[in-house]
Length: 217
Image 1 (cartoon, one colour):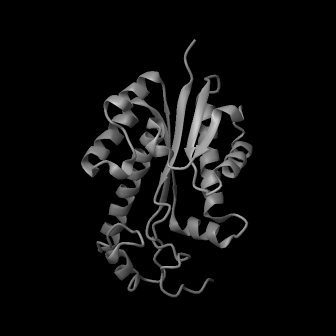
Image 2 (image 1 turned 180 degrees about the horizontal axis):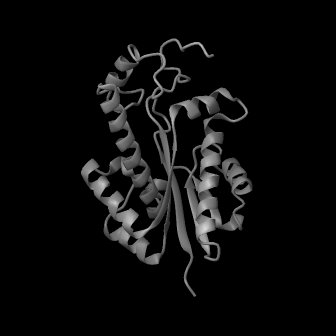
C-alpha cells in the first residue's frame, strides 16, 4: 500500500503594498521528500533567486502542484470587508487548493500542512477544515513558519515566491518603473507610491502606507 502524500501550502506577497498575493500547493510522496532534502529545498526567503528559479522548475516537473493568484483589487475588496479580511481571503484560497488536491487524488491518504497566516493558528485550522471539507482533521495542520520546518511547505513557498517575482517583473515592465520589491520597507517602493496613478491596479490602496486613497465609485 502506498504511503501517504505530504501536502504543503504557503504564500508569497502577503505583506507587500504593490503586486499580488500568490498561494501555492505542492503534493509530494516519499521519494519527492527525499529529493527535497538532497537538493536543500528550504524557505524561499533564504534561497538565492537563480537557485530558487531552478528549484521551482524541477519541483514542477516532479510534483503535483497548483497556484492561485490574488491581485490587488481582490485583496482590497477583502480588506474592506471586515467580516472577510485578508486572512479570510487566504483561507478561501487554501481551502480551494485542498479541494483541488483531493479531486486529483480522491483515494490517497494525505497529510496536509499549511503555513498559518493568522496569529491564532488553531482557530485558522478549524475554519480551514470546515471550509475545505478535508476528510480528517487529524491529518490537517496549520503552523506558523511551517516553511522553515517542513520540506513540502518549503517547496510550496519556492513556487509561490517564484511566481510572484515573475508577476512583479511583468508589472515593472508594463509601468516602466523599477519600484523595488513592492514591500513597505523598500524605499524605492515607497517613493513610487508618491507618484503612482490613482487608478493603478497593481497597488493595494487599502494599505496604510499608501498616500491618500482614491475615491471609490
